[in-house]
Image (cartoon, rainbow, N blue to C red; front, side, top):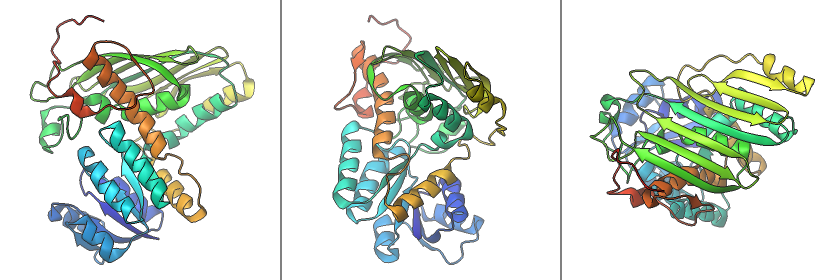
Length: 362
């Protein structure tokens, strides 16, 4: 299967290695700064892969079956729409778009062109998260009481200086959009996509050179009455501390921890068989915050194309995760709880919103 990659920056090695591991024919690499494509091709010894700084030209010439988009977040919409319009399958990095309108347009275009749109929310395919979902699906938790997500990471100015699009509302969003969207995706996937309302408060405490939040605190009410808390920050001193997800059920409880919620810290169920699952799972900690799930996302997406089935993480899943972030932005912007589903919301709506530390009325 012919494959091409658009965007040769920080996340691109995970895509390229996944393409190699799944035996794709890599026909093109593209970056608006051609030197990035040159460096990536050299690193992976792709002497015969054609390099481009124009993705439309690459697709027209190389005619790939499958294109991955790993560019800056704010560029996803236009690139993906162009590729889908050419009848090519697309796997796009998170977040799939910066607004719900754009996400809806992308989903509709994929349906119109009868091609697949997948989103790289690869942590759904971690061994630990798959085991939690298996326990949920078989009813082992019983009735859920509540859950929590905590993403406590560190991002200093040198991280934002690496790319001019980072830390801006139009092209990136803040810690909730960039660092926490994977955890928010998992929390909603675990506890149910039917969210009733979201309440939040955002602040920029230690990054005055950014437009966006470096801490976000939220409360989620699900339609079944269960609740969840959210804490996301990039303000931890020097090093990433943890990403943890807790689920408390009537007949079982779980805590996933480690840097990226890949480790089972607590696993206890009334059902003896399910109780044994977590205790017998040998999970090695990931070497980076990106995890090891990209190759599984690739394998599934290739199988979707070959066997005509819905990708494990499709455009609607990507929209659900995006909606969680944008609902937190909307709650802060409006100073009140917001009800879901949201019809429209965008990071650009946050332009000019005060993220100082003055108390707010709700």
